[in-house]
Image (cartoon, rainbow, N blue to C red; front, side, top):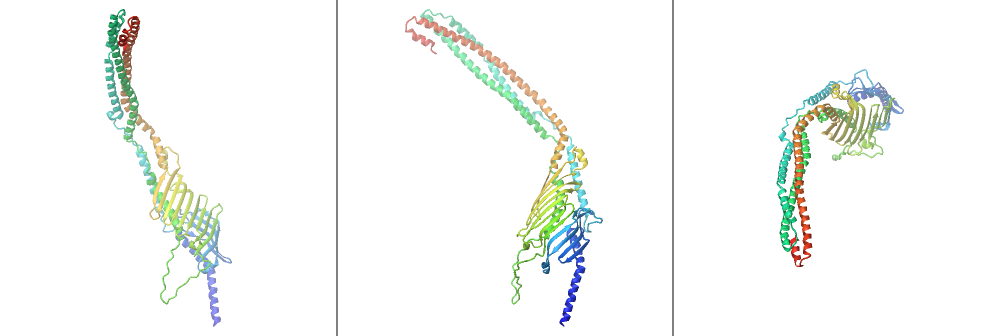
Amino acid sequence: MRWKGFITLSVLLVLSIGGTYLFAPRIIHISVEKTGTAVWGAKVELEGVEISYSPLALRLKGLTVASRTKEFENMMEVESMNFSLLVAPLLERKINIEEVSGRGLAFGSERETSGFIPRRREEEKEDRAQVWRQQLSEWLSQVKKRAEERIDIPEINIEQLSSFEKVRQTRQKLEDVKGQADSIKEMDAQPLASRLENDLEEVKKITIKSEKDVADAHDKINNLKATIKDSEKFINDLNSAASDFQSGVSSIVADAGEIDEARRRDFRRVMDMMQLPSIEVSDIAETVFGPIVVDKFMTFMGYLETARKYIPPRKEKKKASKPPRFKGEDITFYREQMYSPFLIELALVSGAGGEYIKCEDLSSAPWIHGRPAVGAAAASNFEINATFDRTQDIPRDLVVFEYRDFAVDQAVGSLNLRAEFTGNEIDSRIVWAGRGLLPRDWLDYIRLDDPVIEIQARIRGRKSNPAFSISSNLDRILSERLKAELDRQIQEAQRQVQKVIDDEIIPRRDSVMQEAVSLRRETEDTIQEERHTVLDKKREAEREIENKRKEMEAFLAETAKDSEERLRDLFRR
């Protein structure tokens, strides 16, 4: 009986080993192609699979991964890949790969058959690109149409100009100053000069020979002194009026600068009222580039989410429910070594041109493995580095991507992306810079060689509803070029506005200034003449009084001493 059981067990073991040896490669081949195609979204194909058992290893030959955007191009192909597996985890139905190595890596190779799977609808992608290009063309056409509109110069009402009002106020000041000048002219010095001359003649006729002559001199000298005081008051009044007159004229002259400043303000105000062509294009970034940037970003996010989905976060520990009464309870004992359900410790696939794909510590249970997954890939035109940290309660991922020939529709440029994930929060920055974005007819219109256009976008916030902002230097480039092209037309409009204002204001300003200067010169001559007329007579009278004082002092020196007091009273001022 025991021999029959041993024979049965042996037959089953032989069949199991033989079935594995015969059918396992085929099963792996089908699983890789089917699973890879379903996950990637384009065809994943293998030429063959080989298994070796001492040591346990798996070899994939001729792996090709089709592009999801180009029908007859491979995203990647690998000549061969070798997987070194650990046996112990397999006994627990866990796959732990110690090392992956490969050779013959190539990106962007051609393929003879379509790499699309039936569910892909590339026609929609083509339509979206055409729609975006059409939107850009329509937007540029609207900008061009606005820029070509004729400049409308508004009708200028001279009386409403601030410079005109300033000229009017200055003219009123001039009228007031003219009144001051007339008042100065009315201050006739001739009558006072005649009085001085008459009184002076009377004093000159005085001869001191007796006491009676001293008494007569007393009255005549007092009359002359009174006339001198009147002349001093006249001169003071004349100087005060002259000072007020000079101040008024100086204020008028200073108004010339204020009139010019008001004229410049009027020019700016009229220019602001003009309907200039709309050459501001600040809305282009969000309006035109927004949809395509979001589309490209969501495509990238799709790839990234596919990778993140297969690196799950730490699961919350659930409190075990109390087993039913009189029922058994499973108890898990601690083991020094626990294996992740799936683990690749190190994977490196390289190509002849320096291409490589590298992956370390990729695990389906990183909290067991204890290290974050790190990946990197590089080729002639791109480089990507990624870190997926699931060792903590809050997942933290960082992806840095640089693509040197990244296409935005028909334009090609460099793309730099940095995306950081913390739980459900995302902080992403995208910068694309390249040429070929503007249509040829537009480059001809603005007379500009194909410029380097830079588009910057930032996406941050919760992953389900992030905030989106975008900017571009195309706004500045188009504005500057349109302004340069329209500069002649704008300058001509400015010249016309300036001429209208200047023709009305400058002659009025100059007329007021000339009248003020002429009035000042004329009035100053009058003031000087009147002042000198009085001053000359006044000085002569003062000299004559001094002479008579000396004569009387000499006469009184010979007379009684009691006459000294009378002499002092006579000349006391």
